[in-house]
Length: 257
Image (cartoon, rainbow, N blue to C red):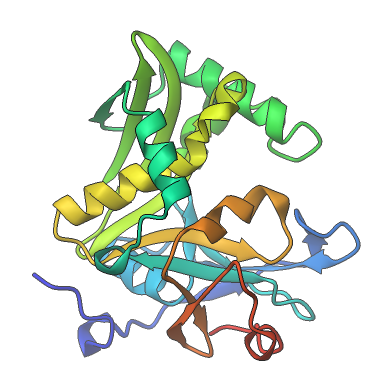
């Protein structure tokens, strides 16, 4: 069944809560706030897909989106996989990682996965709130009780190099999180994970790959600008946008939804 985000069946009345201001993970000098769905609401994948279409994401069971008073830098992005164009540089990344084996399985924690996650977080986010994660942090962040989530493992021989966490939707995939061995960063593993997700979505006949948020100027998100054509959610609609070539007119109206 094709998902129709404009269907009246999906226009649900939900209770939303706004957090007090808290420290922003991207701009230390700016306060941030988060809009989130009532934790007591019985979430399901169809409702989540409707919310994802409106710029929301999930962290564990919690569905949220940034809702800052004076800043609108966090822009939801998605890739229309049928129109995806493989550039020469992305083709090189794809070929470089063809020696990896890929397997998908339901969410679970293993010592191997947790150690990889712990290594990645402490290497990439050592000064942030995610540093020094516990096993409980691992599952409460990546898994959810109501979703169709897969842990996709990428191995070099028997060594686990990367895990991509994806949600399977009616009309696409949502990239929840990806973590990998920092010692193999020359492989551009984060980029390869998106390439694999694009191919997987195409093979399933999906339309979209949701890639979370884009923050202009954030180095950690720069790799997302390599994927075209990208769409951003703005003024309550999805519009095509080149992340690598900022449009000043669009950037002046960053508020979404």
